[in-house]
Image (cartoon, rainbow, N blue to C red; front, top):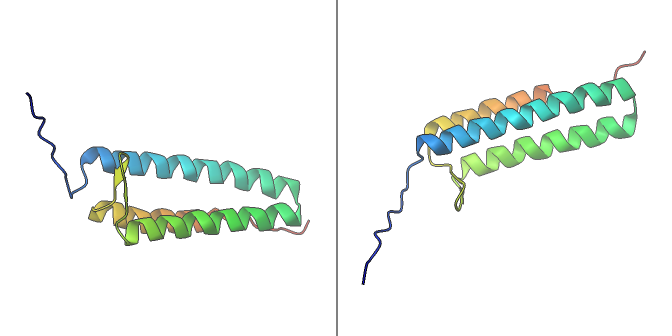
Length: 103
């Protein structure tokens, strides 16, 4: 009978960090496109929904990285570079919050 050795890591690997930053950049690009669309439509309801979406994404990211949650089989958040990246990307998300301009 063969036994397989299972190694449980408590540190983030370089692949976890790469997944995290790529996923954050994809979300950032999505929010940038969403901001352009919302500001062109000039609709108050769309601005409010866009702002709520940005706040939800940035707060979820800070909660995930702050409390070192593990998403099994996907990303291990126990790295300082991921925590710093969570803070930076949350600020970038807030910068991309749609604004209402009067024309």
